[in-house]
Image (cartoon, one colour):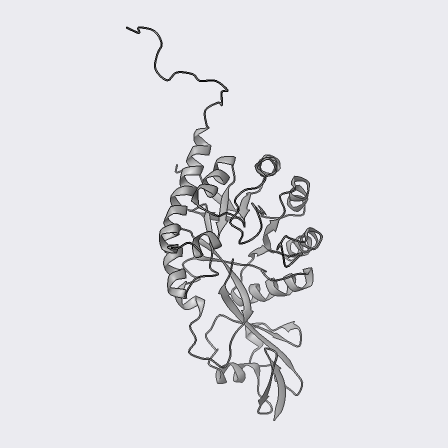
Length: 67
Length: 257
């Protein structure tokens, strides 16, 4: 188990999960999103390589309506 | 009108009207308004996704980013750091280099913080972004932005969402005269005739959100803006008649009975 901050909310995930695994869990794989992991933007190609650990901060953003 | 091409950086646009996608009742209305406006570029914001609500509709389901140009903006950012972070994420999301920079200075007026805006423009241009910049209607600062490599200068007509129209035509005209990059009125347009006035002044385009989204009939207003922008542009190109202080008859005075 690992406790991470996902979009500002405490979230418990199973240990050794990668960013890709997490996105799959939330059905976000083919969505137009971008990810910041502990303040660093992660390129899509690295989603499978990046393992999440305790206290990690993850931001998942997308486009919304705006002016 | 075929030779009258609107270009921002290397991107050619058919319409001189750019529309925002905020404040609509729902995404369906957003999509219909965008279609009616004839715009080929829309502004979008970047926010956290709701990871738990898998069925919640999202903007990209209604406006296909492959068919319409998404212009990511930094609305809601009050510092250079926040704006840069947002636009770097936007670039990662879809490879967008063309972005709208908007660094706000104050919650009450939503006026841009020009010091932070200038700083951010310099950095973004260095990082390879094509930056369209929301700014005050100060001709000196607008020129500075161009010197820093901005792809378009976007002065406000009046405060964001105010609908007060162009408050300082003289300044806008000076900015247009000084600028080699497109000048696009961003913020403050209230109704279709305001957009015509902006285009008649010689603006290269206008960016409209609230005036369409907050109209009683947004879809109809989107169409009104489409005509207003075309009308203003054609009027500008045609060149208006000279103003006279006294009457000059329209019919010949000779041959009167």
